[in-house]
Length: 100
Image (cartoon, rainbow, N blue to C red; front, side, top):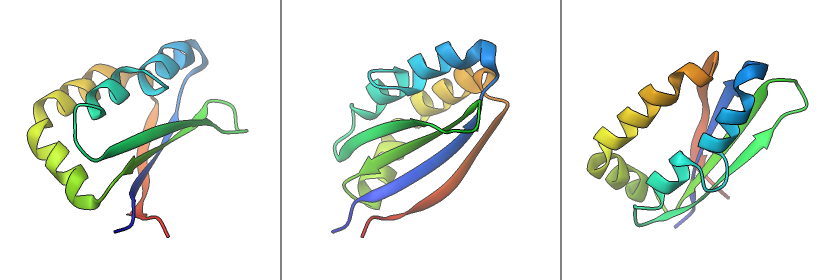
């Protein structure tokens, strides 16, 4: 079974970049939540060459593992999404699929 991958794009204002990196980077709030779930393989935070633009690449063992996580931790996921919504000017899921 192929890894399931979800890629998000963010636009972050300069004054909020430090807090954004803390929340979305290695050991941040999002990774701590994801690590509660079976099938989570990791997240990579990418700082793009374009100032203020970041990507996250979330890796799961399968789509089923990700959906099981969402089912079990929906409240916690929604809470983090709301709490950190102010850190980003733009947030968009740009790709979902299976790694080849």
